Image (cartoon, rainbow, N blue to C red; front, top):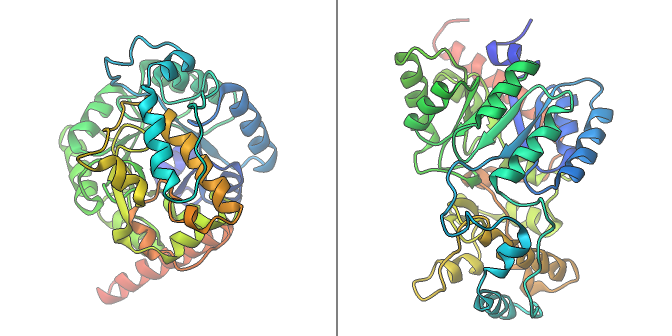
Length: 379
């Protein structure tokens, strides 16, 4: 019997949703009784097809989902740029010079020209919709969208195929707009989260969104996201009205993740105050592990960040250079190693397998629920 409505909708055994850009994490979580959600944004449609075909073979019928980014708001400065070559050409060469200057201070050799991302890759509406089409060709049990209202095409196709559509929000007014648009699940994500996030804390956002949806007559389940790294936190959010947890950062410290050993080491050593909400990686506010890269771009005398997707076209090749140097033994470059990660990083004490993380969440969740019941003399 499903644990709650969101489990019934998605087929999840335990409502622990694991967002990851790594197929290995997604498959391991789903097979362990959680629900893996594959982040599709950094892939071309052809690459996504390969990744999802692999997941299909690995999960033995266990449910999983896909997360795409179809941004609702596009900066007017880039709206007319229709491909990655034209976007790269629109970036002033001084930005590459600034990248070389920042990285050069940490022993990373300069590159004369900006590398052009492959076509059909990057956070744009057309790329997101193309990835959505690939996702729907697989037996997914959930599709999610962030950065604005879920597009009508996604909601329509989801209903046609019986696939719930989830949307990430950072404020109650966003949740109400998504509900009115017809999404099936709201993922309320607090500012503690890694990646793109708003400014409201998870502890405030969850009950606020649950209350607002109920008062408006929307019977839509809510998943809690942002800083959730333990089963105890998950239980607390469910006590506040959520029906499960949407997690991301906790999986970055698993050996299955796409993260490097250097970054995982930095995660274990990091404090919760070592993250920063910055536009310097994607062009929109996103929380990540703070380094001198962020100090340079966010400084008053810096060049200023570019709009999405241009900023990502500058930053991603730079971080690939950093990772290569760090892996080759450049200890200075390790200081610049960074990734999207939430404030919950301070709760990461060691690396664990994805399967072990699911197991620990279950145990901590049950211990917290039974402990609370015991405290209230309700057993």
